[in-house]
Amino acid sequence: MANIKSAKKRIRQTKVRTLRNRIRKTMFRTAIRRFENALSQGDLTAAEQALRTVYARLDRSAQRGVIHRNNANRHKARLTRKLNKRRQAV
Image (cartoon, rainbow, N blue to C red; front, top):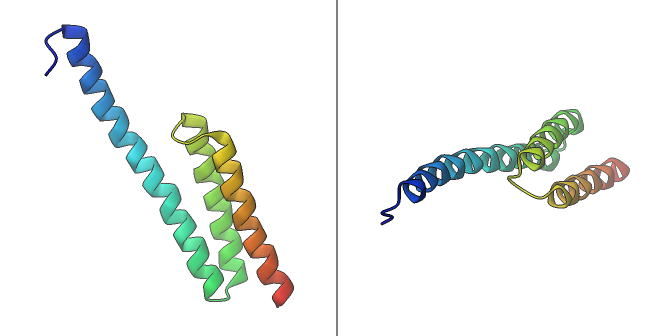
């Protein structure tokens, strides 16, 4: 356990930040799951709407520093590719 006042404050700040980051990660992972569920059910309009939500969540997470912006862009590219592949199949 830390004895120095500034170290104790850092510990408190880290706990709060970790909790916030976990919430944000959960939000974009849930959005991705909803998109993939809509896609697997064949509902392309719902999948497109879900993809917009995923974009917003990923961009916000990258902006806040939860994930790296390249990581967010990679997720977006892969999900868009899935949607386009499904569109061509139909």
